[in-house]
Amino acid sequence: MLTTKSFFDLSDFPHATLFNDDKPVWEALNNLKKYMDDQDYPSFDPDLIPEGVPLPYSVIIYQGQIFSTVEHTIEFGDTTKGKLKISQGSKELPGASIIMAGAILIGNKINIGKGALVEGGALIKSPTIIGDATEIRQGAYIRGYCLTGKRCVVGHTTEVKHSIFLNDAKAGHFAYLGDSILGQDANLGAGTKFANLKFLGDNVSIRTENGMVDTGRRKFGAILGDRAQTGCNSVTNPGTIIGKDGILMPNTTAASGYHKPRKILR
Image (cartoon, rainbow, N blue to C red; front, side, top):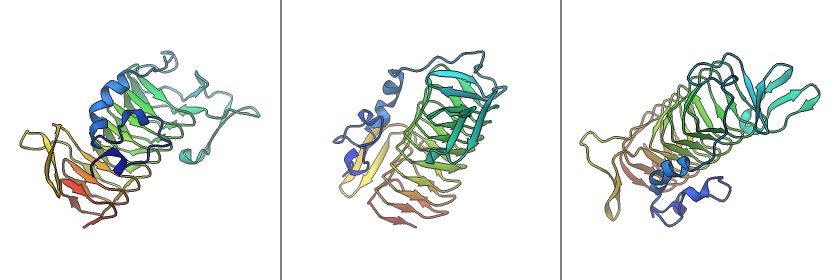
């Protein structure tokens, strides 16, 4: 009931080895730090991407190289639909990514996938892995040990810490995610908050039909199965697990524990 395969289709997720189909769904959070620390990360030219200060100008990443946007044409179409287009003269650079002026990168373990966009004002701390065709919007705060799949969105003033986005997961506006997992095509309404720390100081336990299950985790936000959604200004208590196609209605607080697939929480 609480195993990974009950919540996610990982067949196209680039980091599927982070998960174990038959382990509890939160096990990936326990594996996340080691997994990310063991990855290979590119070395950015400090003259083009100075660490810890706003980029003075936009830069392009293409085939492992970093260069300025001078003499390039950029079409800012929908990144998640592959419509970010970067050309040098008449030659299109397929899979090129862009980090816009004003973005801040901290640390040497940051990987940005193909066709991705990092807007000005975003702050990204190491280690972070940003998947292909993913959009990191203005004012996003990525605090480290964050991993996204393909075609994801981390939105304006959204804060993410020690969390995983599966392919097509989106937290577009004013959200907070700590120690959490968004399933494939999951979507957070504006203002969604995932609380991840209990007031009483003990481990987070999950309430199920068969009793309480100790996760062994001191910090645990929420896990949303594939295609689950939250409405605007919704909140989840620590240790909230929503099954596939579940819906948390706007202005609603979800109780801790397991909520079955397709359930509507009011």
